[in-house]
Image (cartoon, rainbow, N blue to C red; front, side):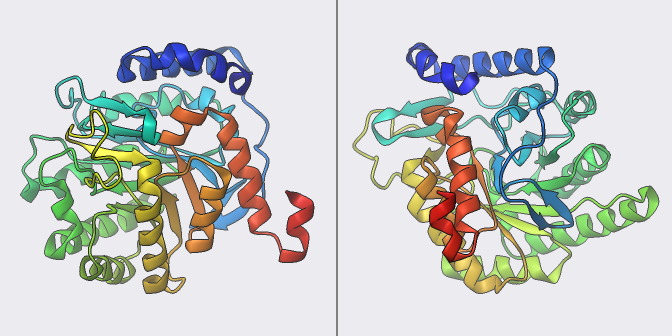
Length: 350
């Protein structure tokens, strides 16, 4: 029903401020999730990764439902997994408004939200009430007023707080909208963070009897040397996967458009090529030692297939949902399932 209605309501939503429109969509999804029974298991070709069984390869990226208020409604769209957050230990308002901008000519968004969220306690309470039993990822970050030298303290708090409700936990060290956050992707900052959080995860596994895989989300704006260091460091610790990528600071291909001068991370179609290139380079560097979850620029089924061919095992959607609506989810589920069949069976599945 939502997939049918979205093309009808999209003109109205696009007439509104982007953040207001987003809040309306979340409210609708929350309402639908409350009144309808949980959906049956989603369709698609199942895959086992990180010790988890994914019913299909298509997930919702972090940022769409920061506070976990619409998990049950989002589950009706058919996702194989849903990632909520980014959540921080303490509630924070994020950056001043306006902070979300559409570039419809490029099918893109610019955001400088700044991890606006209700805090980890609120998210945990929301997630604990969900009726959907699918795979839930929780994306965690640091509060804006926490010095970068103390960032690991915030990640520890968020990890401890979300362990019980998460199927995997993603470390967001790549948002461009929190000052100095991206320095955590480099050198001793990355090594310290992964060492301390890996040790904490091991202790929690032993004390709770529950294993929660750790995943790291990286930026697309990385040179070859930085990416090589990240790949080497990730494989030196018990990290279960890498998400490639977050939004970009580049304005290549959109600099001439209205609002392109706004600061923040660019997502959508212009991110597709650069993000996919990072997936391809990571795949070459990792040589199968870690699975890659591809996010960034998927607006068609063909885009998702390109991510799989570049080396990704799973894909995530966000901006594509804004422009294409829920039908995109089903298109990508079908295409990625067909792509992963033996070649002789692909034409029959499409």
